[in-house]
Every structure is written in structure tokens, then in C-alpha cells.
Length: 341
Image 1 (cartoon, one colour):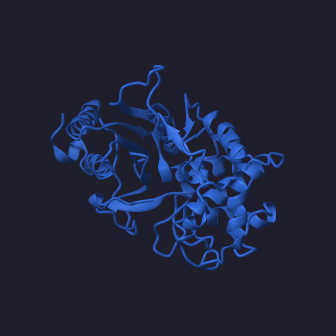
Image 2: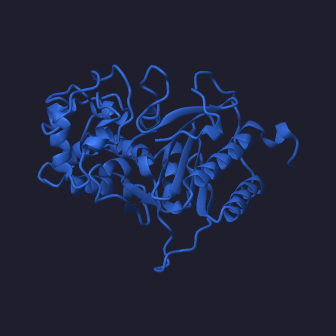
Image 3: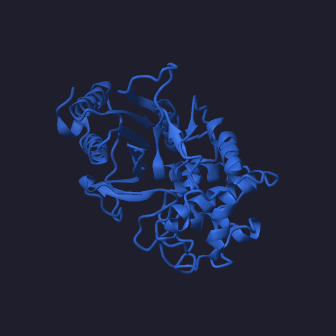
């Protein structure tokens, strides 16, 4: 999960100044038009959306529809882990799982070095003891059971909660354990994870046509989702709604908060700041798709920028520039800038 240097991201240690974020249609149109122009210059396609207080205030897709007339699906890559943490929150609200439950106790197939005291929260916050190098130990043709078996043989890099190392294996183990907790009769953990996503995410959020982008990959849950901009907007509505359709607003917000000493990593989210604006991001460049999701708690707003380009560096730069422009809107409301009637 990469953090774009172009955003000048810092740890969100200081409090942001309170701002009223109520963007006008004019300013939102400017943001969208500018993004579309930059996409055209880069010979790329993409989409963006903005949600405030649980409502979509901007949604534009600059990509042609697919042959069947549907919206393009954008692969989220490791940003899928932020959506997986919403799945965990929804299942926790339904008392199907607990973020602080010991994974090994409830899912005996999981273990690091043969055993582990790691919780579901630890796995998604990258502090379960799985090193960043462990991903390379998983063969490309491994199935979910193989992944868990190999994981149990890997010596822990540290004790749970003592350190943080980003690892797709950690997120994949969380996903397979979530799948097991959803349906203990299903031996194919990929299928059970997909079924859990269908029941606890896709249906309650009323997604129109979600897809799984890496079902054939051994670490499938870590990069699982591909969404249209319409479905991405519905996700962001949930992130900013005072009365979300799954879990509750406090639980949804809590999963973004950092658990590490540097004050950055939460469940699939990274704390960031630009100027006096503090926010959380989930982002990646995966399968030619650059993705950046940002949530601004003080403003109760969220945005998604998605770019498909053969040049991933261009894609990530476009997302970063668009986010910076949005931050500028947040920090300089009309009454402050005097540039808008």
C-alpha cells in the first residue's frame, strides 16, 4: 500500500482547524472538469466521486462503458483492505465476529510459527507478527488452505502488537478467517470470503455490480475488490453517513484510527495530512489502475480518485494532484478565499 509522495503526507498528529465543507456545484464541476482534462492529457481514463454527510455530491466517470453497457470496474488493489475492514465491522455489528477475538482460538488453521495471539484487528492493522517478506514465500499456485498451512510454518517477525510491517499475507489471512467465521461448513475459504462480502457489504450497501479482481491469486482477500464509480460512491456514503446502513458511525470511524507507535496505520487505512487538513487514505497502483480513497473526519467527507493507465506513475500522480486540489477546496472555502459568489 503506497503513500504518494506528491501529496506531502505527514502523520496526523496535530488537530485540524474546524471547517464547514459544503462545496458548491460550481466548485465540484471545476474539480471534475480539471480531473477529466488531466486524464485526457495523460491518455488515460478514470473516475472520481465525493460524498459528504452520507450523500454523493459528485460522481463522474471518464471511461466509456463496457460492451454490455455497464460502468467500468476499477481494481482497488490493496485499498481493498479498507473495504474489508468495513466487512469486519458489519459482521461485528451482527455479532458474527469480534475485531479483538484471538484468530487462532476461533480459526485453528491460522497460526504464525504454529501459534499466535493475534486478533482480527492485528491482522488488518499489520501488527500480527507477519513480516513484509512473507508474501514472497507463498507460491503463485497456492490455494487458501496452502496459504494458511505455509503461514503456520513461518517464524514470527515480532510478537503481535509490538511492531508493524505491511504484508498482503496478513490481510489475506484475515480475509480467510473472516470467510470461515461466516460459514464454517464451507471448506473453500475464497468462496466463503466472497459470500461474506456479498451478504455484509454488497447487499446492504446496494452495490450495482461489484466484482472480485483477484480470485485466482493465493492472497485473494488482500486485493479482492473491483468497483464501479457508482459503487465506490455508495461505499463513501457509508463512510460519511451519520446513520450508515451497516454497523454504526462510531465503529466505522474507529477502524481507521492508528494502532502503531507512529500513529499512521489503522485497519487498511493510513493517517495523513496536508497543510492543516487531516485525513485517512487507502491507495494502491494495481493492474494498471491507480486508486486513492480519502476520508476527512472533521468535514465528514470522503473522495475517491481512480485512474487506468499503462503508466502507473502517471496514474498515481493524477490521483495525488486531484486530492491536493480537493484539500485546497476544504482549506479555502468560498467565504475564506473570496473567489466564489
